[in-house]
Length: 637
Image 1 (cartoon, rainbow, N blue to C red):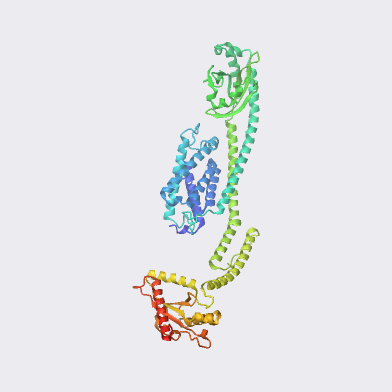
Image 2: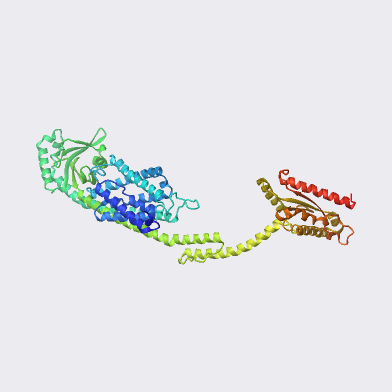
């Protein structure tokens, strides 16, 4: 069923797009999260990180084109896609239990983040599109909706991870093949590709730059909006303050002042001013501010904009965040400036408020008049502007990531992989790779030339080094005088025979040979003639035992290890030594040229010999017995 997908990029990419569009539409139509990230996760896990980003971006752009503000959740999509690739590389999707736990953790974090985006960006712009359970009107972060948003996303991502795990297990040819599910390469080393490191660093830099730019633009527009609407509010509050007669204020502020004719007159004038404002003024209040028991409070005097308020109603400023921000300035009797403008949001919506102090006939500040302008439409417009800026930044951010990724892959990763392949080929074959050439015109080309030149030097030096090593090895294991193997080589051979004996497959014989009359030659004719005698003896042994190694283990002692053909013909070969088993003729013209020796042979017996030493000792004893017989036959003591 999956044969058409094997090794093909486009069918898998198209399948990911269709899945993402399908689940995106299901989520849009139902108002619930239904595997929202599944298509992008599938693309990321089967094709790679950039493809997952691309699928999420394309679907978000399509949704944005039809008016769905979920485009602003694109950073959350990217985070889930990145977590999917990272998790696949580190074995998250290797087991169902691990996939479920990781999916719950990633999804819960994504849910909380998307809740913030939905509450502060999506809902003010298009509240009708967002499901009422997700971001209900007037919801706060202390409500249970924050937790349930995390739970929704947690179940969503966990379900997607479980499906991906099943695909990785039952369709391994098409899924996770590019990245190796357990996160390790063929050499067992966990891979941390340089492209991801560079991409992540560039993404962080881009995000930081985009965030700084966004907040700079946002600050500029906020300041402009405050100046514009603040001027309107200042005009209204100045005119409204003229409506209040300062001679009436002491009477109104006195106990029972709400029942006086002065209060009714004040209420009538302010209400008329409020009604003539063409609903630009949302609320209009006159109230006194003071301290009682160490707590700042505001007491309503007149509020014609909301009949629910009554004369004498008290607001404790230290319990209300809005009043807490401006309370210190309003309580300062020496501060006679306008208070505000202040932009706030609550269950009454967005408001811009400005307060002007009111004075009694003696010039004492006794009350404030406040104007609240309706800012819902203005904030909706500016939020829409913020959304467009964020959308543009997301598109630019995604395009920059794609361009950076393409640049890194082509200009950095591709030459690095070529150099890696070049070095690997050289290491395996000990020769230069002919079909590779890097012509990037930058440091990589220079590095390629340096490596190529270095390989030439290494090959030349390696050939010379092999020759030198061969010479050194021969010198290390060869007796300098006679040319046969030395004592070091003999010890290596003993270790080899010991291993064979331990394995139970030993079959060899030891021939011990000792020169006769070497002391006589050295004392009478000198050591140079003694060296000639040693060379003659070693040559005789090598000529007879041409298939067995001959070792000089002492001054005039030699050992021959018989194996193979020489071992099978040992008796015949030993008989060839008979002419040399004699004492040295001291009356000869050149006695040093004669070969005179005593020999002893022993064959390894697996029943009697427990080690190589047992066989050697028997050969040594046989040699001394042979030497004794030779001397007796020659009449020497």
